[in-house]
Image 1 (cartoon, rainbow, N blue to C red):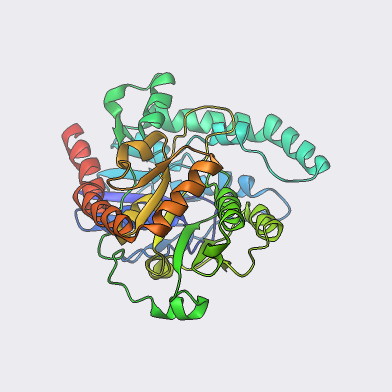
Image 2 (cartoon, rainbow, N blue to C red):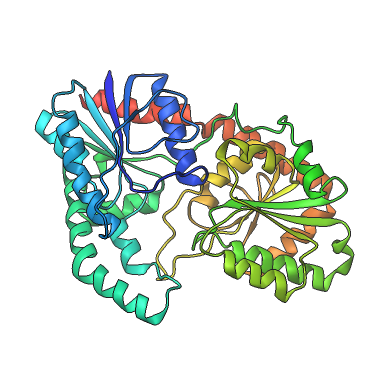
Length: 402
């Protein structure tokens, strides 16, 4: 089977994060099973195969969304005479080229739908000034939202099958009127050969002085749903309540992003500068050794701001599991389905600082529990959640449809 994989998102120079891991994981696994042609507007970190770079269009002095919209026509022109059995595209709000090409060629179109850009425009708030926020609101309301709504509906309507990472997203699509038979629920996964506890990490431990400590860790892009600020807040309160942990623990915060300012404020407010280490963004290829330098890994996902059910499938969760480390995780949505309290993780109430503090203390004090949770988590992820299994499920459905 010949498949064209389209990556058209106007985010460039990404070296780390969940989207990087997901994109590379799917491409690398798919390459093993089909004749894959990857077309991208940027280099893709951690992708093993050669990709074709179709340079992005940039319109000076205009929002990047305009450039992203125009780029569709460049992709369509480039691909119109290419022979392929199917097209696979990672959804983004201003891209319709994959759906259009598949419709024109009369071949299956697989849409990878990780979230609704319409929902994000409506509900994700920025930390801009009042003037900027007002200007952004008007821009979103009058321009961005109508176009993204149209394109999102176009993609969904013309997809032969839609791959989503959670049951919540499946429910969302069904509420749009999508036939359930078109939807594949496929949680994120892991390359178990890249994430494991045998990875050399002594240089990281030496660099940050972690050898004589129980190290708690977090990795991510400090997004609005990650709860990174809550991790530092809970850790600060833990040290305030139990000062003995100042000499025996460290918190390694790996990454950077929009919530970093709040993270730094909490570090200062609780005077834990000597205990909290901010590494900044690290390349995806180095993420595993940073994680391996930790004893406890934290996934403190917070609920959606509008009260709706969380729709994501945190890539970090599967990376944590593959590392064979003790995990503290929010007990919500897919996390509650993948993990089991006191078996593969220590589950806490989302956004509850007291729960998070109690979990930290318990796992710091109990080495045997840490080791058991880590071993069980590793076994679980290798059995159920590898990228090879993820892609096999997509291809089996696609072949059946053909």
